[in-house]
Image 1 (cartoon, rainbow, N blue to C red):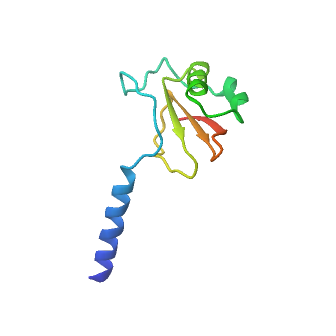
Image 2 (cartoon, rainbow, N blue to C red):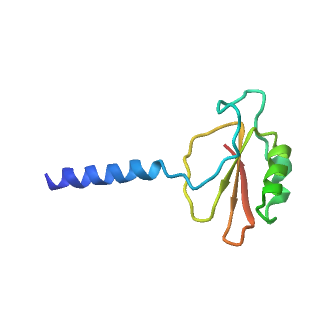
Length: 103
């Protein structure tokens, strides 16, 4: 019985944590992926090491061809759902961009 309670508490904790997303996405009018608007990070890799600012995010979004931008704060977790129209930008504690990926 005690094991069942532990499993229940752990499950509820995971469910609660899964709804807490510290990563912020740029709002879009339509949350559905657009097949004609896919992400390509080939041309934005030179932004790694730059400051993670709103202006830099807008430039990465435009240059990658993605529809949405998702910021990845330091030491944070985010849902691993893949979106071909989204660019992900991770940054460190110094607000420097460390990784740019699609998904």
